Amino acid sequence: MKEASFWHKTARGAECDLCPHHCNLSEGKRGLCGSRINIGGILYSEVYGRPCALAVDPIEKKPLLHFRPGTECLSLACTGCNFRCLNCQNSEISQVLPSEVRSTDFSPEEIVKTCMDSGCRAIAYTYTEPLTYMEYVYDCAAAAHEKGIENILVSAGYVNREPLEKLASVLDAANIDLKSFDDDIYKKISGGSLRPVLDTLITLKERGVWLEITNLVIPSVNDDMEMIRGMCKWLSNNGFSDTPLHFSRFFPCYKMENLPPTPQYTLEKARDIACKEGMEFVYIGNVPGKNGENTYCPQCGKLLVERNGYVITENRLGPDGKCPVCGHTVPGRWQTKHLKWH
Image (cartoon, rainbow, N blue to C red; front, side):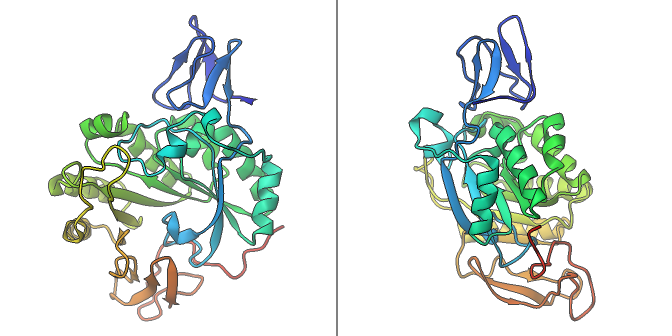
C-alpha cells in the first residue's frame, strides 16, 4: 500500500479529496471506489503497484482514432471505480475489492520495462477507473515519460480539478466517457453527476492533452435525440468541435442484460445530429464492417484513414495531418514512425 494523495484528516478520520464523492472515512473504512482505505487515520491506496490486468492492445481499441494510428499500447488496470454503472463491461474487476481479484506486483519501473519489452510506445490506464489509483498511474506515467513512452488515460472523468491537473502534466492523450447529458441519468445509472465530467473535458483541453470523447448510447436510457443534440451543441460551443466524438453501441451486460443492443439507425441518427451541430469528426463504434470509424476531411470530404475494426487498411495522412487533396490540417497526433525511447 501507499499513502494516498489528496486527502485530509477530519474528526471522523480521513476525507478523500480525489473525486467529487469526498468520502469521509472512519478507521478501517473504504471509499466508494473500494481501493482507498483509512488505516490508523491515514488514507492509503490499497492497489498501488498491484495491477490486475496487463495486455497489449491496438490504440484504436481505447478508442483513439487521431492518436498514433496503427500502433499498440500496454494496457494496465487495478481494481476499483468511483462509479457504479449498471452497464459496466468490466464489473469483475471494477466493482470488486482488491482482495477479490488476483493481482501481480509491478513497480512503475517494471511497468515501463514491460512496455518496452512488448514493443509498445504508450501505456494506457484503462479497463477500470484509473483515477481511483492515480498515485500509481502518476508514478508509472512519470517513469514512462523519462523513457519517451507516452501515456493514455481512459476514464469516466469523475475527478476534482487539482488531482486532474497534476495527472495531466504526465498525460499525452485521453478518452473520456461522457455517459449522458443529463444529471438525473448520471445519478441513476452511474451514481455520479454530469458537471465534474464536463469540467474534466475542459481541463484536459486546457492542459494540451489530446482528447477524444465516447458516448455509449443505451436504448431507453440516454438515446433521446434532443438530449444528444444538447450535448453536441455544448461541445461545439465550448471549443470541442474538432474533438473526435465516438457514439458507441451498447450490448447487454451486468445489470442491464434486459435491454437490447443499440440499433444501428440510432447511432447513425446521433451522428447526423452531431455533424449538424458542428462536430467535425464523429465516429460509430462497436458496429463491425459498417465503416463508421473511417476518417474524412471535414473540408473536402476525402476519405483519409480507412479502418476495418482495429486495423488500418489505408492511411492517406502524413505525419503533419494534412489532407493530400485540399491541404486542410486534421487535428491529431499522427506521427508514428519516429517515436523513440530515450
